[in-house]
Length: 240
Image (cartoon, rainbow, N blue to C red):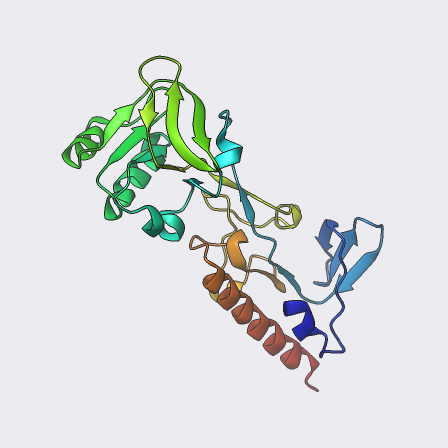
């Protein structure tokens, strides 16, 4: 649908090819090297290549990922509300996600796959909210047709669960932002300012590759903001 809408703009060219490298010269011009060897130059550059989840190395997780194993409760929590849910993570990230999920269900178990790395206050908070902690090593996720049935540990009884949310960080789908020296936050996304600007004049990053709220509607809005800023800058630069 998007491709059909772009066809009406004669100045838009689509290239189905990867971008291997990018650089900015001393004059502020961008040079992008494509996988086929071609080089394109521009006065402005917008990166909107998204991120990938760091998927835990657990047997069976890939068959369940996106069906009953998720990373964002705001995206998938409603559909499995009031169900028995596990959280995979440790430290402050595991603690935070566990407490966050109390908005959707009260049947929660935090699986830390080893020492929990949660302090006394954090453990007390989990206990007050009825969240159990399993610190045994996780060996496998078992389920059928994409739906989680239970979590298997190296020791101890398996844990019956309907779904699992994990917090294991993310990484940039494209390395262009890294190569251009962008600043990153602890989540692995690019720090951006107003209108999705970056540390480099003329470089913008929009969508899931930046900031924290990773929803389609937010990504589209950020793209529109960046486009507005780019167009405004080009007009000002071209005024005589």
